[in-house]
Image (cartoon, rainbow, N blue to C red; front, side, top):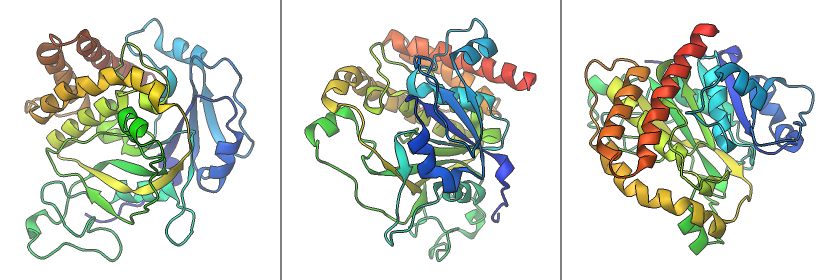
Length: 348
């Protein structure tokens, strides 16, 4: 498998707007974003009108649009950063890239601004190697290759379905860690990409990701919401749940997941101590969630991402539903999401 050429019109950039004035954010990204189509989803709870500078190719969607397109369905919630999933639902492009509105372009070790979009596309358009670990990182990057002993039968790799970027400055730590180490900042720019091994679980950060919608789009889903969930990163665990769902799907269907580059610079936002009160329930529940996903095996009949999500939802309801009702609600939302995905795709 070799590098796949990706056209600009094959890419949508999805932005979850939880602040009304996007001028500063978009100006920071103008040199990178202006080549692509943007889907901007306004947080349904945001009352102010969005401020968007000229010179961008974009479509915006508000609470009224969500209600118009989805009708009476209320099993799936798009509040806060979860509104990004509505953008995933509407996109018709092969590749979707999502970067949060509290992030600006990072700079590499030489002081050059990072083109996060190009790096995500590079990750997705070159093979992943999940079935045997290459100790020299991603062998398809310039200057790298497979190390001695790597089986030649596996060197063609598999399609990369998900690219997980990282954050400089404010890393994606949980509320307990950030509360205990309030001064901790990530200043290390590590120039590396690697494939997450098959059957290894990982937490996903929705702050800076890209994925192949045609391969795993339905598996990037809003479903797991805490009873007292807030809007900011420390107050949610939805994308962590999503990450384990999509990783199970990738492992089952034979796709790969990459992590590392590209970096973004994440600004300060939220109060870790206050957020801990909202996130702590999720921190405890993860102790049940991780073993569940680690042991998850799907049937041969599940040969699409939609099939996989429905099977996972059934197992969630049966095995985790008895532990806490939040899991039953998550399972119902997963099934509803697949229905919405199919319905919207047939309408477009």
